[in-house]
Image (cartoon, rainbow, N blue to C red; front, side):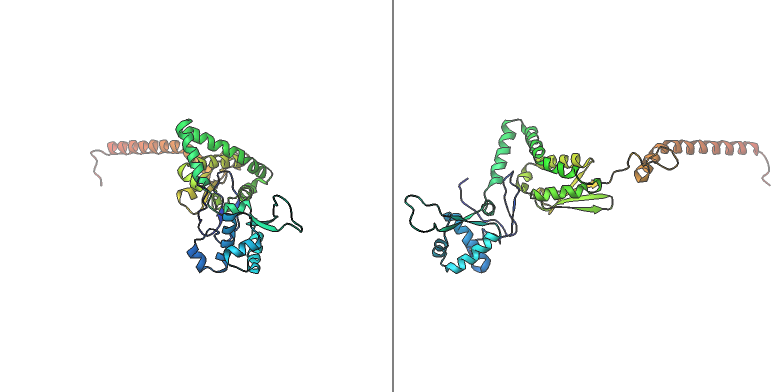
Length: 309
């Protein structure tokens, strides 16, 4: 990496680091271009303040005012907003050498979230690392093993959330745990099950090249929820939301038909019963047709040579 910060698009500013799933508050596209800055007023000035701190390091109000051609009062107003958004934090200025009289000046520095608002190229580094694994450490199987190991470590918090939830609310509990990890997830009911929707994916750019990350995640969801799940859409493939379908259980062990036939109730049980009885029904129809043909043949023989009248 060349260490140069590059602009990101509007909206949520997020880290693209493979293991960093923190979501930064909307600070108005910190990395807007100078042309955009001239056109967007207050927001662009705030972005210029943040970029100046990125380019020059921790800065005093006077430093920022001098570099940006603003009054110190205006700089303080923008800094207050950036501090409130968690993008900038105030620190005591480090003094090297002999300290002068008086309190050290206060400086403002970017937080980790503030740095993540600028493109760090972590996704490029992650793709390069996975490509090396693929080419030198076992091919696609090695990448899949890495993806599963990564998800196993990440899923421990998800497991605790799911296991402590009521069985009927486990999908919602998983969604809350994913949201805390930066995936902006929701759970909603569907006619024949539930849908787990992840509106953000911190590793989407990496998963676009290596879908093993998505596959490992789906496997973990299935194991945590104790049922087969189906991935319907992913952000990595160009969809707006990562959507996972969780079907309703076909039946529970104690759900048997009232007649004591041992067949599971509900649509699934009916389908299974139909599959079992289909061969017998077909054989019965065949035997009935044979009997009908035999009776017709006998009737024809008994009336042979008679006058129909």
